[in-house]
Amino acid sequence: MEIIVLVKQVPDVALNIKVKEGEIVEEGLSYVISSWDETALEAALQITEDVGGEVTLLTVGPEKAAESLRKGLAMGAHKAIHVKYDQAGETDSFAFAKILQKALEGRNYDLILTGRQSQDTDSGLTAPMLAEFLGLPQVTNIIRFSDVSENNITLYRKGDHGTEVVDMVMPGLVTVNDSLNEPRLASMRGIMMAKKKPLEEIDLDSIGITSEMSGIQGSMTQVLQFEKPESRKEGQIFEGDEANTVTQAVDLMVGEAKFLT
Amino acid sequence: MTKILIVAEVKNGEIKKNTLELISFAKSEGFESDAVLLGTEVSVLADTLAGQGAGTVYLGDDKSLEIFNTEQYTALVSDAIHQSGATQIWLTSSEFGRDLTPRIAARQATGALSDVTKLEFNGDEITAYRPCMATKAIQKCKFSKDGLRVISIRSGIFPADESSPSSANTVSLSIPSGHSQLKVREVQVEESNEVELNEASIIVSAGRGVGGTEGCEFVRPLATELGAAFGASRAVCDAGWLPHKHQVGQTGTMVNPDFYFAMGISGAIQHLAGMSGSKVIVAVNKDPDAPIFKVADYGIVGDLFKAIPVLREEVGKRKE
Image (cartoon, rainbow over all chains, first blue to last red; front, top):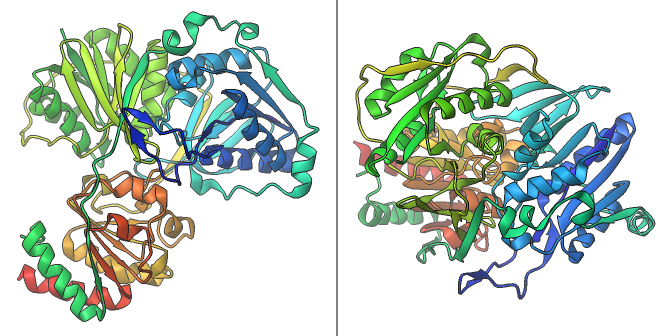
């Protein structure tokens, strides 16, 4: 089984994110693999450990994004492809999907796995667009898989009204929900071994991406600016005996917030 | 001229409220809208869409559409796009919409904006606002090229007008046949007849602090008595204490009710991103440093097993 895992390096959104003058403040950001992509990598590793095969990481991003590939290799991926790209900030999902399509052309794979969305944009658009460009079936937001065979996989998709059980003929593209697994940590040995694993660097020219197809020119949508979310007003904290604090809080909720009225 | 094609969602033989919201919003902006309605035995629902304000309803009613599948649904919506001459396609950012929105856009060789929470129109220009980075920032976006605009919109942002069914102008779509790489076996429906998370005005949610299945059942009556939806944190669903459909958060359901009760929820980042748009947040947690207290309007530091009986009693008294 040949599995491609799409990974994106993103700012760690668990940390403080500041917005100033329409931009995200770069200072103080720390970069990580988007956590749902790590879930996808863990699934890929489990599948290849079970049925054999190789896991290839693929990312499109600046020099720095190689850190995420090294981390994925340390977790157990076999090799990695880095499409060098410096215009990520002005590139939309459509253009990213086109670049990924070109990067995958002529390569051999049974399954493409990635997170249901990336943690920087929270858009969830790139992977299904890529599936369409590659003419592949897609199943999004899976929380379980089973019955992996040479040509088939059974996927459990978290849908709006329950779990949709889908048999997919491979090759195909699958996005994962974080309930699928807990990604493993890289071991010391894994980190050492990662340094020797193949990491292929590709530039846009070599895959036929012209300037019209990348950056702002290749994008269909554009982020004009970032804004701060509306901040919540300071709340009231009640401590002490629950019989008192709950009654007190409910009184205020009724008076101030029209609870039950 | 602007014309919107709205992709309808159906549950238990009814048009979902999020679809009605979109039709009402189109009307309030003065736009003409059509709808596309797909499923099994859904023809009877076309009148509901028409009553709400949809012009033409493009109908795909077939046994093969009973369970959602990307391939057939994309083909049918694409057919409806061409027949209606719509300039914008609106979906909701449900799991249905999240799967379909990018696929439809890519097939039309255009871009999409997803999970939008605010839209402004100025002639042909659209300005869309959407939360990103776990709702720690808002992107202000636009479409930068001419062509079809595909947008998914979060539920519960725009009000749905009251309406009654009226006779619909329908066009039947021809059902694409045959060959598919996907075979949907079944939908394992977990529970029904409960208030849906994204349609609820009150949500009561259980977190890891409830301790287990029994703890969840201790919280549930409060939801029932308030007519609220019953939610949960990811930890509760992953542990199997409640089915996944109860999960509130970025990888569960994004919610913005009038009242959100967080019971024993510490407030992991993805949970906060999924509920911090609630109008009023009430939290009960033993740990005074729990992140949930940073977003709570009313934060009760204490034992939920002691607090809930008092809360139920207070609610009971005031409902009399």
